[in-house]
Image (cartoon, rainbow, N blue to C red; front, side, top):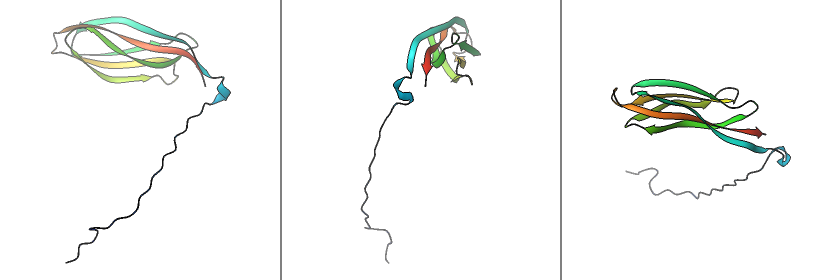
Length: 116
């Protein structure tokens, strides 16, 4: 009985060329960076919350998130993304802690003047 594919070998080579370049002639960049905290939120667990945090006029959103300040709960992030225009951060999250555990937290958005 002859086994096919046993003991066969083939030479393999691989290469990787990674290069980075700037666009826009070096005139682009980020200025006016700021972190904006949303209103403090509190309540009992097992609540789904949705928040939209806007950047100041003329600024673009870079990122956003949620910070749990106190409470023995888990926060399940269901949505964390920029809006279609890139001017606000949308958060939707579930606070999970057995239904009676209280918590305090806040959302935030990071904004800047950004040009391509």
